[in-house]
Image (cartoon, rainbow over the protein chains, first blue to last red):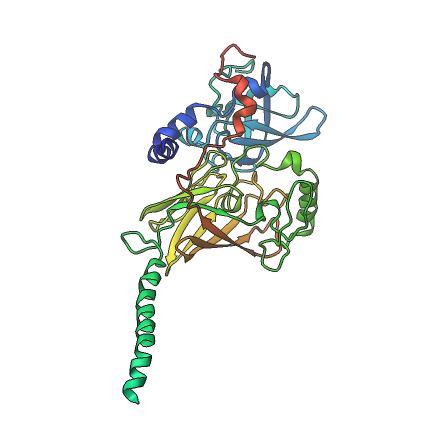
Length: 139
Length: 259
């Protein structure tokens, strides 16, 4: 009886749950990203995934040698992005953006985006992990 | 003579009439549950007995699965050539790649025929489906609304239903590409679109059909069909089975100084 009541409460309070989900990242920043490895990356958006609990932005980045690499950056939850005015239209494929963030502990081509600077110059806080450093070397 | 026959036959006739009358309440019991507005009420705890989750296609047994006749109409999923290569790779590496093994949300339609119970809570405006596995609630809106104009890429898509007689027809769209259809590596892209048909066979049995299309992965739409049975065991209930965060437990609660 107790369990089924818990489930009913979970359904009855979706707004409360949503609030707590957007405030809590699904995993901690420190589980995947390195606060000692800030990165600043400029590239062309290839895809925005608006997925709970973390959205991901993929962009093609041209290196000093001219080689293009596809990077992925973890964003906050879709609802928190929407509150800041970030939708699929804001970050449509082909959009040029600059991201200040931290690199993955694995050293692979993905990271955590603290701020994203849009083509109109607006800088948006796009990260969602509550234990992430709030500034990077580039900001 | 006549009176003799009547004496002889009338008890039999009486029994026949009685049986006919008795049959009426039995049929009445077979009526399906309905909401106050007359629509079928699927509320309850349901589960398939099929081996669909091991492989949607017909398959013999293997070390990690029992055999099954499959639930795909025609037996074969119509993959595009490149997608078929991806499916074979998924199958070969299913032990590490299967999203369900990682504890991820099952997706649609996998949550319907995954071998664990799920519960339906139904109101006039919506149905809420709660699978035992994972931590998700799928809402099927039946209030006449359409898919949102600015959608996310949802794990369970966005479900909008309407009634065609006693059949609930559900259009599901706006998926991400992170879920599989089964543990054999059958997969889809974020262009997945599903049309489901839910219908009572009797008050304790649902016929579930779905048409699946995805222009990035399949050459044509294809159909599946499973039967769902109502759990009627005494005190049966869902027991939380949330596995995704097990690997992350060491990081909780988050610590600001933790690099």
